[in-house]
Length: 105
Image (spheres, one colour):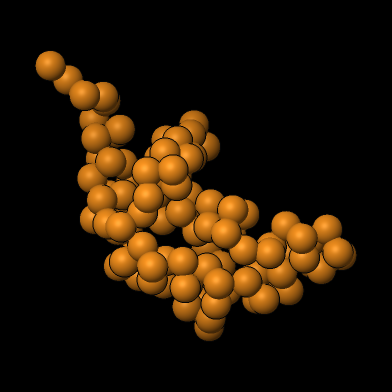
């Protein structure tokens, strides 16, 4: 019996490898975002990484509040970078956002 498409299985595997301790309540929206039509052209590990960073930014940081206060996207992302990396570390992510690189998502 199949448990999803090859793409879904690859996304599940990438999620487990890249962010092994992500809670189920966070893994489901990340999995769904990584499987979205606009992510189909990306390899599953990249889609999962982008989806995870975006999810953490919007659900576990003050990013949206900063944007609502008038901060531009780049400034708001700068101010939440440490919070994103703390959450990724908590989830035992295999990589973190590099402050010297442009935010990928």
